[in-house]
View 1 (spheres, each protein chain N blue to C red):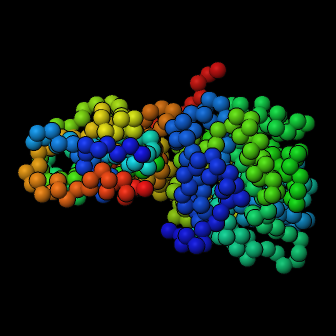
View 2: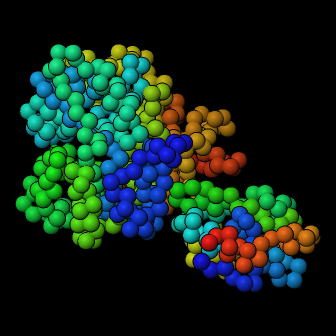
View 3: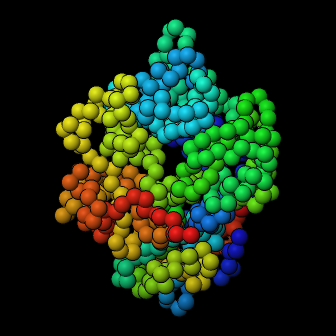
Length: 125
Length: 371
């Protein structure tokens, strides 16, 4: 399983990427493989307040709907509009074009509480 | 859900693992839900061929001079119209007209019938039948569920594959059953031309010790292993009901739209359990009708237990739903008041607090394109 070294991870299989004060959120390669063919994605709305550990998005495979939990608390600033027409991006490029939303998160201690790539790799192996 | 310790295992489980299956619990059984992917498997069955392990389903023979009359008293479809080697879909009802199980029975001998029953209903069906056996010994019931491994071969290439797999096999016509040569053992090997996908295909029943050999022969012939995931999307595209989701003791077969498998108007059909309730329902009007629904907007995949609304008021909930892999549309079935079951009726389906426009459709959802 691919676990990029420059990201931080939630136990619930989401990743974050830091870019200045903007944080991008997606699901991991492990998560997409477990979910199988993703046919629908419901990202949060721009401006929505999300809370760490609370449901922020839903993705659905043919077989099941799965909640995606926000790794951090904050405000959604952008959502990936490509996903509505092409939800399979979550399967094919989970760390790239399959990102789900971007957010601002004021509390940096929440970031420190997330898993390192090493710790996440240990969790899924 | 079932205690994992009591989970039953298919004789083909090792073969599934070798094919990369993802296993799930279904009806008390550990069964493959998918291998390569539900959409990929679904499309293989629609365009070429796929195979499903159906060893979890139950096989029962009913034989003896009293077999016909006894089955007539238990089942909705007239058994007496079956010629030798022919089969029919039928329902077993309780006294309230509710569905205990839906099944297929074949007339496998002059006085012998071969029944195929649902996995989750095996114990219930058998105890229901055993408790109603006549004491005169003229009916013999034989549970062969653990003696058989069974595989459904489905898709337009099925006949060609069957002919390669079992040369000299007498290929049955639709709803017929015949011997399957080459897989002899403790119980007779059989091939029935039926299925649960809307495609041409066969259900193959072989002695449990020959199951893996049959699976591997089909695999070598290029048939794609298919799991319960696409079995569900394929059957729902055709509007075939699933017992436990679309059929239950709470609804009659008339409400489920299965009236053509209930011989109410056949003067030669004797009395059967549940019949008075069905006749009363028909005289008074049905309390509900299993209704096919389609989203008219892009939306999430439909699933069971989503609210169906008419003019803002909840009028029912979905029993089964899916994003149809063949059509790319959300499809579902729901028991609705009869007045709302007419094709073209506009409704809404609520998913996670949002309402999506839907319309009453006609079955089957999926029609095979003209060749």
